[in-house]
Image (cartoon, rainbow, N blue to C red; front, side, top):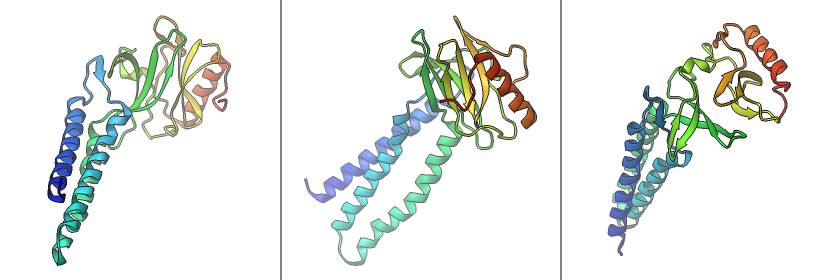
Length: 221
């Protein structure tokens, strides 16, 4: 196989990988359905692999040319990179629900926490595995998970199952923000309470009450 043929194959592979990713991203965009497809983490590497193939194709083009014409593939590479970053970045921020963490409950059920698409908001979700890439929400409404209007306590989000296997918790920003008793379903530890605290003191008070219920401090592993 000569270099021109190799370059064409690399370009074809690059285009296919990026096209497949865009198709998956738009085809699995969040909806109001109870069961949804959430792409696994490795799928989000497809556009990066596609761009690497494009880079290799341009290097092959450089090797087949002489003189100033060698600059043409390099210029196209310089133009393609920022376009690639902007387009793929926008797609991921605006349409893709991404996995943050997952745990297995004592019954063997797998629960996953995600961050939803949103340019200005930080939107967390909780999902239970329904099969393959399909996940279903264990709640009737998204409001069953706390929402931070001013982005307070959104850093380093993690799912935690207590050592006795009785509670599932969300730890964000170093405090407990959510708690459910693990029974047939997931029952809130604080039933009927507003899930969008307004002030920092309200968040900390909520965390302390959760710690009192589960007997575990959020600073614990």
